[in-house]
Amino acid sequence: MSEHEKHHVMDDLLQGLFDDELDPKTAHQVRVHVSTCEQCAARLAAREQLRAALQSQPLRRPAPPALAANILVSLPDEHATPQTSPQPTPITRAPRWAFAALAACFIFAFATLWLATSQAPYRLSGTSEVVSAHIRSLMASHLADVATSDQHTVKPWFAGKLDFSPPVTDFADKGFPLTGGRLDYLADQPAAAIVYTHRKHIINFFVTPVAARASAGIKAPALTEDRGYHTIAWSDGAMRYWLVSDLNPNELADLARLLGAPM
Amino acid sequence: MTLAHATNARNIMAAREQGVPEGSRKSRFEIAVMQHLDAAHNLAWWMTRNDHDAADAVQDACLKAWRFFDDLRAADAKAWFLAIVRTTVVDRLRARKQYVELSEAAAIGNTPPASGTSDVSRVHEVLAGLPHPWREVLVLREVEGLTYQQISVVLGVPAGTVMSRLSRARDAAHAALTAAQEKKP
Image 1 (tube, rainbow over the protein chains, first blue to last red):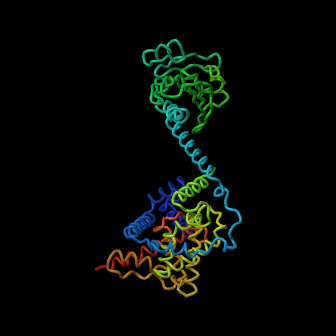
Image 2 (cartoon, chains in turn green, orange):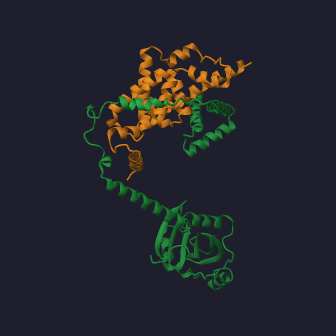
Image 3 (tube, each protein chain N blue to C red):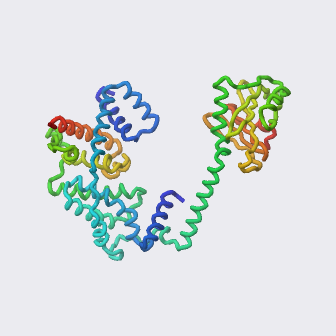
């Protein structure tokens, strides 16, 4: 590509950036380029200047008020229009009750949406929040407050810190040694995080009691993937459980089964 | 049910509340096309720079749109309608040899700098003085706020052409505006 062509391409991309028409990745690349290229920065500034000038004036020329009425009157009659399609679209042919049904659909949809959002903490903590907590635990070298493989040390350690008693069992004989435990915070309440390892993969097992306002009930284990981490979430009606790891789903499911998930 | 269907149904319900006979071809036309009349007039006005010609062209375009309304399958009725308006206006300008092509403008060298004394008239003059292909793309983007995708439908050119044409148009408008401001006493 010649210098001239390169310049040409960058110029088009500048337009795209300015008009907010680029995908985020390209936009970022162009922004990086602009930050180092005086010429492009100047062009972008000129664009801003022009837009400001254009927007400072009432340039729009809307239709005069009478025009719409005049046009509607001048339209030839429907019967006189040979191109009129023989059948109207199904939606306009629908009887009155169909609109009532449609309205009911809307109400149902909104109600569902409202219910879903009102339980957002539950849903959110099912995936991204739990994964974020997992990633945080790996980054901040804050994996365990109590680092021991002795379940009889970990369980009492939680006792004074939480108002519930999380299940702590060492599965070293099954390939999932207990590494420790720590306090975490999930879905607006304290959570127990119990740490297991499996072939160098770190697994966080989060436990919180089901909040009073959230819908109680048994939830079958559900596997989700987010940012390359797998999460298995389930609930026995009293507690909610999440297993998060970069481990493959099959082996993670093995641990979930050991922990009592009805897999 | 798709979103388009939902919007359509909502519009029709709104039309029913306003006493428009449901489902008549004309009421559907009003909902889909006539609501963009201001945008249509704005485009036609900037192309012709004349109230009478703009209204006339828009009326003509509406008749065409009415005739071909049943062909409207695209989701974007606004872009579809503006494309008809634009073709109508350009055909009329060409017939009167008033359409300024880009090649002529390039031969002239530059866009005439505005001579207006106030900021309002200067910006106005700069935009009105641009050759038609640059003027239309700037009006559609900066005044009507259309997306590249919509502009490419209206002008019947690929989005890449929209992008580079906008670039030239902005260069020309900015140069003319700067020249005008330098002349300012």
